[in-house]
Length: 298
Image (cartoon, rainbow, N blue to C red; front, side):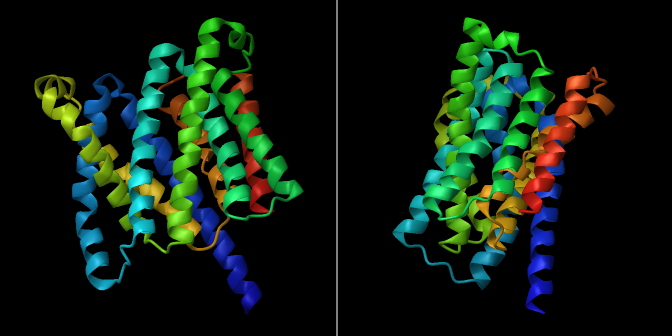
């Protein structure tokens, strides 16, 4: 009976992360259409998320006892700050270098650093299969995003992109480890943790929006429905990941597997945006899928 339960829990955790990857790719596809709105879009989509999930959070707080000690408050504030820093670093990186450099470096270094953090800070034990799976996923991300054109990394602009991508990736690793600690060690409910961290981000962005209110409204023209859609989907994708961690899935496995969104995003780009299909993208998708299989079996 214990063996059956362990297997079903592992399958459920994997299913949650894979579903989260699909949702993550979907909301990124929507957010890409509102990229020009910048911090204004981040603020209003976060505000929409707080409104959407407020009833759920209110119900959880009313029916469950949460100890609001210093460690929980610190975890929530740190999570919100790291999530916001991630968004701003990614945006700044796109201003300094090409997306095709910044994004793969960020998404590749993020799970790698998250896994190292899980080994060092959360006491998780690496296996040969998990390490090979991690390497395969990072390799697949780079192949999908660069389409095999590695010569561009030699240019000064590309090197700036690598620096910003690595900085962004460290923010991904930071909030992943902090949130993993929050749900696994502190026992904070995933929905409560994500909502409170969103509220922290909202409070941090509010002074900028108030001082640039006319500019913010102008930037949001024709983007309000996208902000509402992203506000509904973005938290859901991450809450599913946090639920997988709460069920006992190792952070060192969850962090890389959620990067399946790169492969799904590439497929959506091909099917919906009619982006060019190259052999390196196909190879990258296959390598990433192999990495997920290795991690799932580790």
